[in-house]
Length: 505
Image 1 (tube, one colour):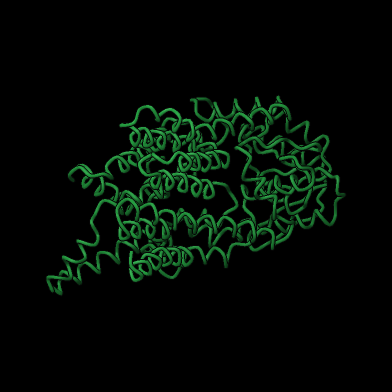
Image 2: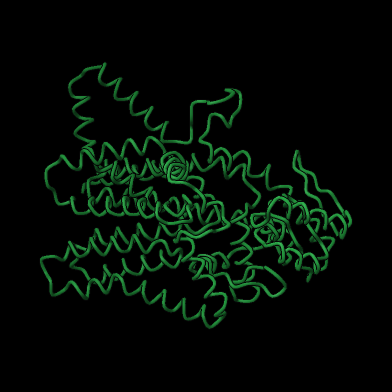
């Protein structure tokens, strides 16, 4: 590769990452308060700093956090401090992983189908509103995607599976991804299928190379399960049952377990992928089925296999959460980027010197990219900024702090007016209030009538933020409110804009 080609190859991923920064920047400037899930991870990370154990501050003793594999909360604990600067640092670490995902997507596409395909894929990922939301977010999905893409890239550069140490490195990255979040196991399975195809002509080396790819993950999961079991067998067993329940057709309290197939398809098509990526995938599938055989066919077959299996399984799994499928975003971008010979297309349009065709190409490309970005034609008042933005992206950027800031203020009040060992009780958004209060907590909204009664009997402070009770009938919810009115006295009302939280004592 000559010097000019190297410079161009460097400019393309930098341009894609710059686009990602532009899309993420509004959240960086406007989102300051933790939301519900972010507060969980910050709480666990803070407890790791203090005790070395991944505990949620539920009850006086705390509860081991086994909801997901543990690598992310331990990574978070290395730099998190109880301050606004610590929150920003945690979010920026995720942003660094997100920008790394954009670069890895480019590099994978470049090596398989050329720089233009890599740039197209990286740019589509960079401007995805769903990816942008989670790239400034304290959760493990984006770090997981980064590790998966790194593992896939190493498989691509393993010289068709002949470099065992590169395969082992790929296996280590896949293990890191699974230890960030367990849903990465499905991606590992398709990486194993790709490796089997790469090694199909050398059967003697298939098994050791397959073991090099998969054993790090198996070892990591076994060590985690053994450690978690020894720390708390009861909590680990309960967590494993909950994992099973989230996949089975059981009556879960979580509203995400009551999403129908049509509503779920709408969420996938509009919130996760977006209509532009859906159309792009349809075009890329047609192009993939029509083109002649090439060396990259197996690679794209594996990507299609992962994407379709992940989406198909999500319809079967009871608990439906779009971010569990965030790994399909770079895969979809790679499929779209690799479906068209972009260099040949651009040369054809420009070499014929047809101004109308050139103008149409520029217009179509611009509209396509704008539609793939968070920008939308206003569905309501054109004077409202939110109407110009993708709905989940707009809520994160414009409404996150409006909704959660009153909980931050409530937590800060309780930190000043309660004893350090106090266990506060919160009706709903306990994780946010308790994090800012730096107190242990109980929350009522998922509890049964009997559990709520026991909690109220030993509660000193009660935070009444939202009267949401998933396990109660309307009559039981009214009885709880009557009991609170009789047993507690009003201490403080916290207001922030239109939002109000009441503190009882």
